Amino acid sequence: NLQDKLDRAFKVLKGQGSITEINVAETMKEIRKALLDADVNYKTAKSFTDEVKEKALGANVLTAVSPGQLLTKIMNDELAALMGGEVTELDLKTNPTIILIAGLNGAGKTTFTGKLANFLKNKGKKPLLVAGDVYRPAAVDQLQILGEQIGVPVYANTASKDPVGIALEGIAEGKKQQNNVIIIDTAGRLAIDEQMMDEIAAVKESTKPHEILFVVDAMTGQDAVNTAKAFNDRLDFTGVVLTKLDGDTRGGAALSIKSVVNKPIKFIGTGEKMEALDVFYPERMASRILGMGDVVSLVERAQQQFDEKEAAELQKKIRKNKFDFNDFYNQIQQIKKMGNMKDLMGMIPGVGKMMKNVDIEDDAFKNVEAIIQSMTKYERENPDSIQQSRRLRIAKGSGNKIEEVTKLIKQFEDMRKVMKQFSNPAAAARMMKNMP
Ligand code: GDP
Ligand code: MG
Image (cartoon, rainbow, N blue to C red; front, side, top):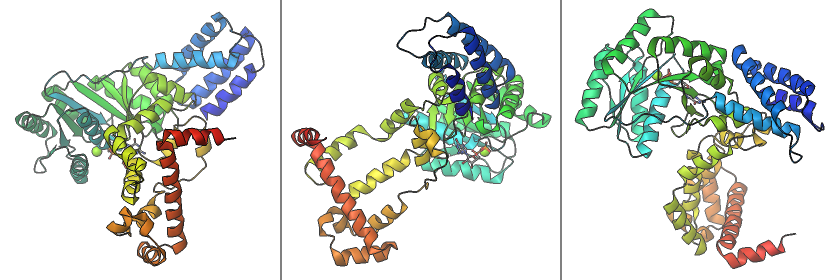
């Protein structure tokens, strides 16, 4: 694990007052090994450590920072620079913007196609998806299901086996329906399969896309780099999408891909859900590679989900002590929308490492939801009304013991109390004062 190795490398420097050539050289050797293990290719790793070494030796050691901290900072900056430095946004100027998706089988193209449409829709765009995978019958269904889920139309023509024709039909349809972004999903293909590569080159030729996004599974390591090179040689794509960067912090592929094909990474996929998409921020990825956790992404994702207006409504309800089981249930849905709990917790500094061996159920709220669903409308709105006989019925209905129901109601009441206190500034101040 890169982080463990970095930790060990930094230990070499800990407790030492200055950065000397000897300990930097030693540390860099460790770091180079760690980078190689994280799928960064040799050339990249070597030039990276040389660069960091030079900077570290040239830096004035401030007394406030330890050599380890200083080195971390330098590494962070250098890693970010290596990955492009700045955010590279999609080029969406043309109307309609045509985006072609390419990559291997199972890389996550279709999933990303849905995620991107969802992302752009949330930004006020009007996307159309085109089902261009003519080889797997289920591929069209998959895209249609995603489209329905996110409320974005999908163009498909199951009678045709011609990807170029379908793409052009899709674009015509999009123009007719006044869609301003048209995203073309394609079949997975191997770079060594000449015929398949000719085919996607032909789709490119006839559709003249403004963006060609190469989707690649980050978990495939060095293979991802080789595939990226082969696809880029043929398609000259405009950007990279790294998928399956959930939980696991391996960002090595991001480093190598950028340095080998010199194309920006534009997005990362962090889960199977439609919301599990992040814009690629080199700086954050650098921190993530160094194991600092990606707090900014976490906060942003949370903000996106919790609509401000809704929050204000909720505040009002809490103040009037009207927060009920319906609100509670809605809150759980919000949290679930943010993605897998384990992914989310993995983004918190320090927690990521701890979580590796902890098994959190994907659906940690299943029981709670079942209990709330077994309540009547009246009960949800009037939690105080739920006495013994009602608890028994709810327990039976939801397949739980009555103790579970009682526990949930008790927790709910406690939560309500705390929430109420915090919504009243005077009470909150009183509580703070009483804290030890
Ligand atoms: P395609 O063959 O390139 O179209 O790949 P799909 O979009 O069908 O994805 C293949 C599998 O990878 C599916 O099971 C997806 O749910 C899963 N997948 C896609 N993106 C991600 C991701 O970012 N994280 C995780 N964990 N799974 C993903
Ligand atoms: Mg697909």
